[in-house]
Length: 293
View 1 (cartoon, one colour):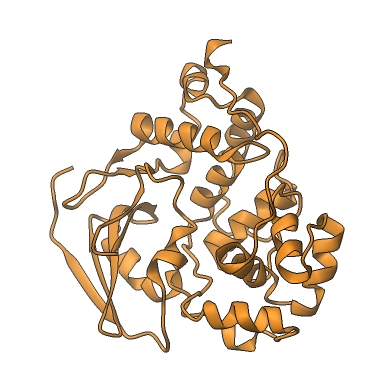
View 2 (cartoon, one colour):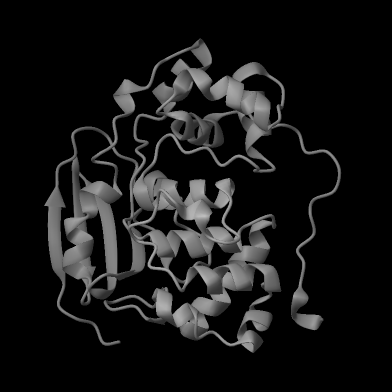
């Protein structure tokens, strides 16, 4: 798509923001066709908005946030810029229950839980990441965006994730070529029959969507600072190691996070960013490839 006229917005946030950390949760590997981080620290996103495809770039400059956007979705992206960077979020209300959390909060001054406003995009990516290593999910995401996404408007070479109806048109051959196994293909196809944009609270009613997938969707699309992705292989270990010096399971993580109701995901995110990761033991999960089957 040819470069279109640039639109621009300047927003002064109420406090410090780390643009890369806030928007980084939408990045699916360093080679994500829909999100890139430029050498100057700006973040670029290609999004299929309710108004059509759009490209947004965000950069912090002298205490202000400068957003620039292109394409039919440019106005929608700029209107939602404060929310995407956590304008609705209230990190100051986090209860500080221990010296460890106090230290994490001090190091996370620029962290906000933003919301993209795009439930389908967050959902389909979360389904791809169900119970697999990241490399496997990211490979499928890259392939399908390059095959079915459209060129992003504006001055950079990126791909806009396809809208929900297009996911229903993806052939079984291309699902197979992406490396995605049939169960996740069926989950995405079934979910694509439903307009999920206003159903963020009832995602688990959809076939194949469990608490882990729903939580990751709510975090990214709705800015839910309290969503906990139970069932994650790594998170209980990271949270336990950081908060009490030893890994725990889901039940242990739930107990540790209970004092932080309303902010449980915020504590998880702070542990991910600034906590202590447990030593790796044993072999890593292999990256599976169904394309040769």
